Image 1 (cartoon, rainbow, N blue to C red):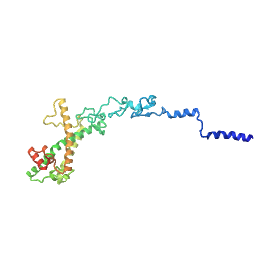
Image 2: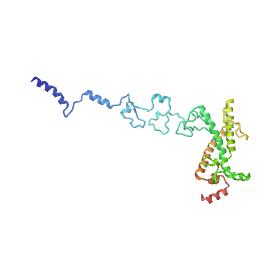
Image 3: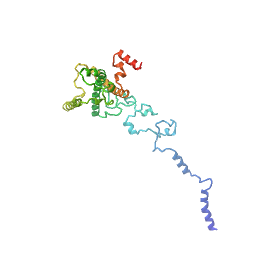
Image 4: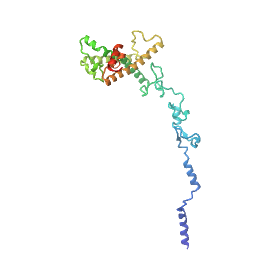
Length: 296
């Protein structure tokens, strides 16, 4: 009888554990479960889209944290041109935007002191002072060449044949009287090597002269070659600034124009002076050509 009583006493607790009602939860287990559902202060909640309401327990308990850490926020300006932050107090209020790209901050080195500076550097080419100086020189060189090319391109298409005939020379225009360019296979028309030798020699002489001058002198404006035979540069600082900006702006327009000329002639297979004759020919000739082509 003693053995039976002992056996029954050991089986009853096990049987109670597997009854249909299940084990009775203790108070400690219930408190642990409730605690697990509440976010831990050590694991903050990020809510950049403002999905948690202002009266939510998480926000009232201070568990909603900004994406940027406090250290980063103190040292880095937060720029939000599209107003994506629900809490605008986290956004820096004194961020100067670029005049050319108002949805981006103005680059640090492009402070407006240089002529033509409108804060346009989306790829950060001018990352330091040396890069800015080099990029400025490159832009002005290409701008001056582009302005000359934008004038010379249509003049060549209008007058090259007449000049070649006057000197009894073969014309060097590409097919359909287009200016020779790399896009229309026109550079192959210059068969004689003297043209390429002279072109490369002049370019090399200019670059070497400039490099030597930079080593022996210290010019504040390396793009100033003291070339102003007509005294158009201005006398006062305001006039000089105006002319310098005019050169930069017209040079940028010239670079766009040259790219447009080459692309138009490559796609349309005709000279640019024939595509838009109203800009390059007398009005009577332009209207006659437009009416003949059916453009009017």
